[in-house]
Image (cartoon, rainbow, N blue to C red; front, side, top):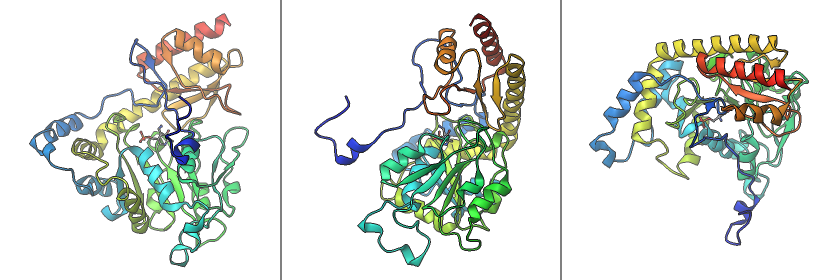
Length: 377
Ligand code: PMP
């Protein structure tokens, strides 16, 4: 269905995000949604089992107190500088509503004279980036403009130093995997107006654990910096739906205002318990993610030796292009051979595929099939 007379104007105006396929049948090697190929820490399963008792009668802690304490401890910040939500998608959606303005009568006066994004001024994000950002902007009616990434897909950080209603930057970027050096990222946060930044910069750190530098240590210095994190990738918990944000207390309060106007209990008891155990088991995850990074480097080298172009990646996926078999053709050939990757039918990147890192055994099959496909074509 493409239209119903019962839809509100808002529902009619939306162009919702389309997530990567989650096949319900068949035995695919699944390299299409950047999940971690390794299981969560055994301590996570234990914590969830423990939480799955009689207490499910009761609502969970709406403030996620213990989880936020664990996150604060791990990142060296205060619990009041931490917000937890139902996946980083939800945290990002709340952040768009909390910090960016739609033009309209409601935002004619700036909040307390400063701090809110100037009305009607578009927010900025890269033209090649996570495709949920324009969807959130559409949901909240926030105008945006995209800043083109360079030919090699690196982020042109200077181009972000313009008057804007806010900035969203994933580091590393998705789906390219390219990371921005922290000094360049911080210069965007500072803007041209050093000392008095007038717009919020959201740094989406979904993939930072796989090789980029986190901006968390700088949240104390920059009241306009909010980092957004997920347990879906580096903590092998895509199925639990937990994300969080770290930033100045005032930003966290802004997120709470949006959440508590929507749903006070976004994280259930099982998710809070499991996430807390994951946050506390860094040794396990450090080892897992070292394996993912080693696999990525091995697969990148093997693809390059086959003549495939590989964008340097600091994430748990590779963005690749074959001169012989591009985009949809390569995607379909891999799918026919039981391997699911992600193809984005979009300007500038339609020739590329994004390949999430699986186990070494899965990636051996992937490489073997690439050899077959590329020799045949
Ligand atoms: N940010 C980026 C850049 C992503 O690729 C994803 C995963 N699709 C997310 C955020 C959302 O992750 P989740 O909602 O699973 O935490």
